[in-house]
Length: 480
Ligand SMILES: *[C@@H]1O[C@H](CO)[C@@H](O)[C@H](O)[C@H]1NC(C)=O
Ligand SMILES: *[C@@H]1O[C@H](CO)[C@@H](O)[C@H](O)[C@H]1NC(C)=O
Ligand SMILES: *[C@@H]1O[C@H](CO)[C@@H](O)[C@H](O)[C@H]1NC(C)=O
Ligand SMILES: *[C@@H]1O[C@H](CO)[C@@H](O)[C@H](O)[C@H]1NC(C)=O
Image 1 (cartoon, rainbow, N blue to C red):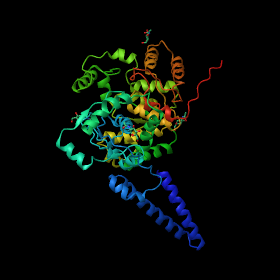
Image 2: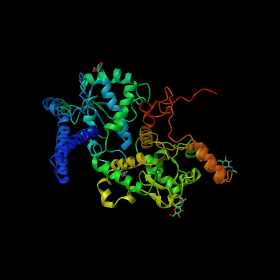
Image 3: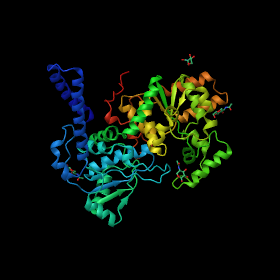
Image 4: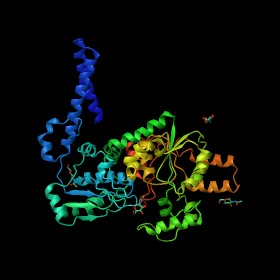
């Protein structure tokens, strides 16, 4: 949309320039006219955006002001209002929003701008509009679904005078579920609240046009607010000046250790510390976990020390700039020592930006995560050390942008190789060769999403490989 607008502005500016030139005006005059026209267009554009987000009646009245680049509003019989309360960290919320736009589109309901669930572990009080450009979200999608900032007055009064009808949609639910089980409830109650939105829509089995809409929502309609975008871009620019860089999502934070129950590399006291944290959180497992088995199954995040070994085995140059995305590393002073020795150019947003530049975001985990997201998507190589929404979302976005290298570590095999190297069963060269071989084909190249009917948790996540939105997949030939 913006691109079109700029083009329009450019054309007009061109004409002005020609007129100016014919009259033999100096360059300053041309610049002046270009500036005037650009400013006028900008003002007009801002007004349009504002109007576009007001309610229907006003939109109709002022519709003459629309630029043709806005999609025409989709006309449909409204079946009710959907309020969603996305939960979890930034990326879990983000992907949940994408799914809910699809659901709203499919059920012909009006979506209210997401109201984030607070009181989650991260304690972030950011609203949707603090993180995403809300006006862009609404106008970009107006050809698909009607999105309002608030319920219309009548529904608002109703919502304030009686308890909202709410439900938790089923995980990885099909469209039929939404049509048969959810739509009747919306029709009955007029307003429905989804109390959680994480992974509530199937990965597969949706019409291709809806799968592609999932991508447009994710990669086009959700745009970070200007302060976040500018600060994130600034980090990228500074990193780029030094050359290529690798983004490492080092998920070695206390909460991860607590909810996974993984203890590799922890002292007894530390293990007790994180275990207590697990038991203090509702919704995290309150039963004993077998950490050894968990690690052997590849279900633990790599430790910083393991990460250093794996990077060296992969042959990653010692001088590579490594941007560490993610929160505070657990016991970072001692646990980061190996990695810092092996890779002296370790950076984080806190070391790249001045304190005052980060200040506005510091108390907002989701906004800090948004900056990591921007840097990770832009990096030359992205390597997450654990599964999760950030890893999935960034990997998928990088595929969408043309298969930028994402190395998916085979944790299950790696921990076994690491143990064999450590106890002398494997020499360094053998270890390194095996690590390299294992990851030759795990670089984010085009592959088909793994589908396992009836086991959605074990199949590839839609957003990590949105193949319906990527160039057609070349089938491997069966010729011998
Ligand atoms: C939604 O609206 C379209 C027309 O725009 C119609 O074909 C479709 O059946 C409607 N679906 C529902 C669930 O109301
Ligand atoms: C969130 O707040 C609780 C209670 O104040 C605190 O214990 C917890 O450490 C906070 N979480 C984070 C990530 O800061
Ligand atoms: C790494 O950087 C150091 C110091 O700048 C330089 O002496 C060395 O040659 C570099 N190594 C490689 C492999 O580029
Ligand atoms: C080395 O570690 C591997 C993996 O844990 C194990 O299978 C093997 O038996 C160990 N070998 C020795 C000599 O300790």
